[in-house]
Structure formats: C-alpha cells, structure tokens
Length: 526
Image (cartoon, rainbow, N blue to C red):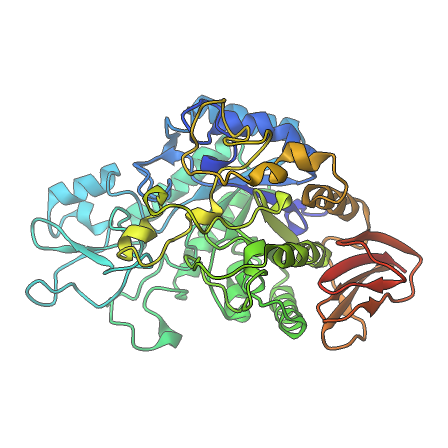
C-alpha cells in the first residue's frame, strides 16, 4: 500500500495569521475550521499547524508552558479535538508542531528548577552550569536570535538557551525529559493527530562538556550523532499507532548525507529540504541540489521533501525578485530593491518545478496567493524576538507572517471581523492578492496552484518515484517523469523551443510560437 506521506502536499498554517475567528486580531482554531473547505478545494493532502499550546508568546508559541493544552488565544482543547475530526471529515490529515529542544521559562519544570537550586533533580532537566569566571558564562556560545546563549539566575548559575532567554534548553540525556515527551506524543496521537513537525530537530543533543565552538565538523550542539537515538524511540512509538502517523524534521543540515541520517528506515519519515529552499535562481544549482537530495534520501529508502517558503524565511517571490538570490538564510530580510514582477514570475515556475520532483512538498500559507515579503513593517510593529535580541539590527521574520488577505479592498481583508486590527499590519495595496480577487481569474497565482495540485494528484507520473534528466542547454532544466511527462524550466535569458510533445498539461506563463519564455516552466505530455 502506498504510504500517504511519501508524496503528500502539506499546507503549513502559521496559526496567528490564517484567519481570526474571535475578533481579537490573532488567528485561531475557529479561523482554521472556517477555512477547511478552502484548503480542501485547494487540493492539499494535509495541514501542519504551528504551536497552539499554552505559551507566554515570547516567540509566537515556540516557547511552550503546557504541551497538553491549547492557549486561550487560539481556543480550547475541545476546539482542537473538533478541528482534528473536521479535518479528517474533509479528507485531509493534520500535523502539529512539537517543540522538544526547549520549553518556556514559565513552564512548571523551569519554575521548579529555579526554586530547587543547584544540583537538584529539577535543575538537571535543563542545562544549568556554573560560570567559568566572575560574571563569565560557561562558554562563548551565541543565541541563534542574537546575543549570548546563557542567562544568569539569582543564585549565580547560568542556563543555556540557544534561542530567546525565555526558551531554556532541555537536557535530553535525562530520563525525565525523554519520558515526558513520549507521553506528550501519545497525548496528541490519542486525539487523532496524524503526525508532528519537529522544531529544531537537529539541536537536541549537546556535547557533554559544552565546549567552545572550535571544529565546525564536530559542532557541540548542531546535528550531533546522539540525537538519532531519540528519534529511533519516537519512530517505535509512532509505529505502534498503526504505521501512518509521521514525523517531519526541521533540521538545518547542509550536508545531504547527514540530513539523510534523520530519515533512515527506523527513524523519522521525512525532513525538510532546506538546500532546495536556499538554492539560487540558477539551473546548475537546482540540478545539483536535486540530484544530491534524491541520491542521499533514496540511499536510505526515504522520499525527498521539498519546500520553497515557511514562517522563518523571506517569502520566495521576494527572494527571487532580488538581484542576488544566493543562500538566503533564515531571519534575514534586508531592505534591498525587489523586482516583484520578476520574483512572482520565477515563483510560478518554481512551483511547477517543485511539484514535478519525486517526493512530498510543503506549501506555506499565502504562497498560493503569491504574497511577497512585507519588508517595510514599521519598527514599532515588529514582534519577532530576533529584533530585540539582535539589538534592533536584524528585523526578523515578521515580514513573512503578516495575516492573510481573504476578501475586500482594504485591511483587514476578511482576516477577521470588520473593525478588528490584525496583530501585524497588512499592506493597504493587498486587494489584488485576496482569495476573492484571485479565485475567478485564470491567470492568478491561486488558479495556478489549484491547477497544478489537480494535475499532480491525477497524473500517474507525479508524486513518489524517480526522475531522469533529458539533454538540455546549461540554463534550461528538462526532467522526465514516467510515464510520459516532461517538466521544462527555462532559466535562460531567451525563449526556448518546446520539446516535441502531444499536449501541454500546464504552463506557468503564456507561451507563443512553440517557445517557452524566460523564467517559465511547463508540464508536457509526451
């Protein structure tokens, strides 16, 4: 039987920004429930929802205070159970976020650790250490969000936080920690979720000595070998629920062979392919990333998992509209000139390329509308802790998290009830990006996404499997999927004659005289 996750198309919901059902300006479970018909009609197989747990919201919910309850900002546990059931009734599956690297500093465990003091079992659940000198932290590690990765508490010890100070790292060598998360997984699996996206999946294991970073090949906290033991135990747990519950790893691991270790047969099911997301708009670069990705995951029997945007990176129509599209890193949205028309054209072509590749694909909410990055948010509107931790030098990720426009000609564009102000301001000129506007226009991004997902679902050549490259100029990609499908992507500066074919199944842009324009992709039946 075909395993659904090997070629699924999964839609990421950044819960704060899909739809506000309560009128408080923040997206919630009621909003998601109201949009299930839209997601079903879009043609996705599943949805992944970013953290909805109880949280002080220092990092948009990725600082969890209670993993077994829903934050009142988003609804109730009963609402979540209704959403799981209704998602299944609409023929889709539902994945939730699990945040195992750190908790909130308001989590009962961390509060108990502060109260219990040095050397206590409560404190052992986290990475508390003495400093290496007066007013000196245990090592030189830096937070991913900027600033030191250590914060000192009243009794003089320091605790590790690879992210914000409100997100203390757990010590995964402790049996308490492992048992707790196994129980959390069971809690949600028992309620019918179909899987989990694992936040910071490559960061749970730390070098026992917590040394300074000296050898990048032996990093003290990223992608350490010890992490795989954890995921082997998680896989056994998931398999005990029938074999169709899955994990997808958020693991920023550059080496494809190292990334493939996370998806070995007894570990996780899938892992995001961030090298594809970060690939520049260049045919050779795409060809190399695709080949390396497929080679590495096929060697362990896993599918590739492709992605173009998510809630941590600049939206790809903006990335592709910049003069330099090379190595876009998370948390980096500089104010540089953008040709959004060019970026959108490339984004349309990139969709057909991605959906033609073997494996599964993740879509980020709003990309089906062609939303650009909002890189001119007022400074006083920024909410990302990156902005504060970096000393107001890195603007952070808010620009890709702006609430979605659904209808109408002015904010809030149907995101919430009229008169409600969204938690991040929407551009006033987004009226041509609304679902209402795009739904009836055959040339719109939304129409392209719906058509591409419809063809992908119905065509035997698309989905899981293998690909072969057909001969082509260096700046044109032609890949073949069996049976009888070619995907052609023209990244050159001149029109490219279409190969011999019987039918054009779908094109990202209009074409004339049998030639594919620059920055355009097409699916051909041959």
